[in-house]
Structure formats: C-alpha cells, structure tokens
Image (cartoon, rainbow, N blue to C red):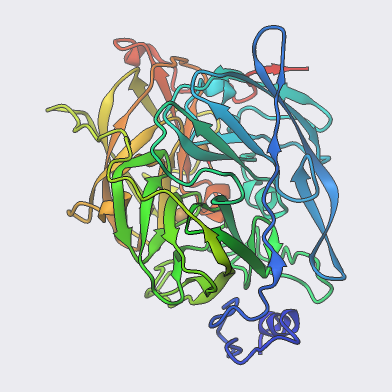
Length: 496
Ligand code: C2O
Ligand code: CU
Ligand code: CU
C-alpha cells in the first residue's frame, strides 16, 4: 500500500471511510458521500485598496513565507501566502480603474507575481522577466480595461513556479463592469469563489513536497483543498448560488459537478460571461481554467461537489479520477434568488478575418515546436491588434495551452466546435492526448518590442521544464525589425 493511501485514511479517521479507496494504484482523495467534510469553507477576504492622491487604487501585497496553517485540526503545515499564511486576498476592481500593485517579496527567494487573464502591458504582466528579488518591492500599474471576469495571480519565476504555487502563493482578481445581469452576486454568500487545489500531506500534517519538481506531472495530490480549506463544507442559504471555480492545481484536471448529477448552468468562462447560460452536468477544468456556474438548491439538502470520470491527464489512457471536493448543506429556509436571466450580456465571438494569419504550435513532451523555453529568445512577433488563428497540435500526453494578455475563443477541438459551455472568452484550453485546437486570438495594442508575453502549458511541472514560449506585440509593419534575441536581465515596472 502506498503511503499516500494510508495518509488519506488517517486524514479521515473517525469518519466513514468505506468509500475511500485504498488500493495500491489509487491516488484518489476520496469518493462517495462527503463524509469527513465538515470544515467551514474559508472565503478569501477582499482586500480594500488605498486610493492615492493620483486616483490610483493601490493594492499592497506581501508574498510571505513562514506561514503556519492547520489544514487538519491539530496539525501544522509550513505554508506561504500573500498577506496571510496561505493563499492571498481577493482583489476586486472595476473596469476603468487605474490600479497599482505594490508587491513586496518576503519569501526569501526570487519570485514574480503574474496577473493571469488580465489584459495589460507586458512589463506589468509579472511573467518570468519581472523578477522581484528577496526584500524588494515591485509596483506595476495599469488601467483595468476588459469585461467582468475572474482572473488570478500567482508566481511565474522560470523553473520555480510549481513550488511557489504549491506552497500557497495564489489569489483571485474579480473584475466588475457595467454589464450586470441578474446573477447571484453577494460575495461569499451566493457568489462564492472556489479555488480547487490537490495536495499531499505528511502524517504530521505538513505539505508533502515530494515530486513537485520531478517526473512527468510533478505533484498529483490525494487531498483536496478548497480556498485552502481541507474537507470543506459550505452552508447554502439561498435558492441559487453562483460559484466562481478556479482550478489552481499544479497538474490535476477535474470534471466538476454534483454527486447527484444535478444539472446546473455555466454562465462564464475564463475571461468573462457567456452570451447565455448553458445547462450541463459537468465542467472540465484543467489547471488555470475557470468557470462560473449557477446552481439551484432545495431546502434541507446535503450534496457533494465532486469530480468524476475521465480526465485524460495520464500519459497512457484516460484515467478515472473520482473524488469529493466539498460538501454542501442547505438551510431549511432558503432566501429567494433571481431567476436565471436568459441573456447574460457576454461579448459575442467574432470570427477571424478571411486570410487571418495561422500560427502552428506543436506540443510534444515538454517542448513547443521542438524548443524549450529560452528567456533570451523571442519566438513570435505579433502586430498590435492582429486577429489570428493559433493552431495547437498536441502530439503527446495531456497538456493545456495558456496565452498571456488575450481572450481567445476555441473555434475547434479536434475538428469540431467545443462544447457550448466552453465557447466564451478563454485564456487557457485543455488538450487531451493527441488533440488539436484551433483558437481565434485577438491581440491587444500594448506595443513593446523588448518585453515578451508568455504562452505555455499550465501544467506547472511542464511549464517549469520549459514548455513555454515568448511573443512580443509590435507596431504593425515593424515585425521584421524586431530583435529575436533580448537581454533577459531587463525587467519591467518600477522597482524600489
Ligand atoms: Cu497562470 Cu503564464 O500563467
Ligand atoms: Cu497567465
Ligand atoms: Cu503540459
């Protein structure tokens, strides 16, 4: 029996463990009835900004080590967090806001902080080039200019992202705008973020870091944390709840739904709302993907949010990965909720123009187009405002593909339109073994020929192994004058 399976039983000791698999090959967190899920779901606090004399909303973020987190009662794990012991606060901003992030690095080693899904100049992006040395403060600033969505922030240091995220550095960014369809919207009550992460724990409750920087997948944990809560339980007090789900796991893919297979509606994807709700019974989320869903409840229910079925992450055939994520208990009296609107006001897709440039990216092993990441090499030069087709061909085991600074639409997956619930604005697409995706990608106009944006697999072990490339956005017509080699030492934003 593997140690992990033993740990799992220990973690749930006292609870009914009959449903917990303990066969030798299993890395399942648990499956079945949600027994043992009794810790109140933690809701990441919203960080109020300071408003400076210049009208900027300033968010002070400190990346810190030395956190002591009791994921399991009486057992302390050493964790990292942002303004806290584990994970970070939710940053809530409105389209049009001018924001300044004051990011101080107190983790004792170099890192970066990237704003995933946020549209902004490359120097402010917090990718591998915007390194923050220990003790230093980095202060990027930009204007929020994109539709309402949920993004997130996490370190992006080249070759060290997996460990920094695994130890706890991640948080949410929620953008609001003037399009306010009648959806549940009280944060933490009926508009609830769910940051899903899988971890392995040692017997003494410490995070097991074995494997995070090894092997094909890095870590695949057998315990689930939701918002940093182990064995999470959420008390439903309203007829419907919107969950904003983020897969912030290093490698695991989930097919999220409910143990009773109830149907629910997807209302948003990575980059914002859909045009109209789409009814489903499962949403598949690979690392970094998000979904906003609206679920209807009846009084006095006990339901389990779970992940079941094939997730296609393995190098061989798809694997069944069934386990519980969270238990939900509904009140006897549920407050009324708005009826689900038939139109959500999400931005419609626009087709790429005839003759749009097609770029091809072949994923194999942990390489893209037979290359590993080189901080000094510019792989692609994109004219500002271009609307292109990026074709991503996965010739090997499961990967996904994330592009910084864009919203894209998945036009085709294996020659067919993707499931309807995935047709909203995206920044990350899952590519099962052997899959091909055609993406319609509209680029922004923040030109900077020497500061690249990244595109990469968001399975963090793959990203750290170099499954990443760099593109710059330049003034149209200047593509051929751009140097393909840059000095990776240059960084952006103001450091002090
Ligand atoms: Cu979530 Cu390149 O990032
Ligand atoms: Cu990103
Ligand atoms: Cu990958």
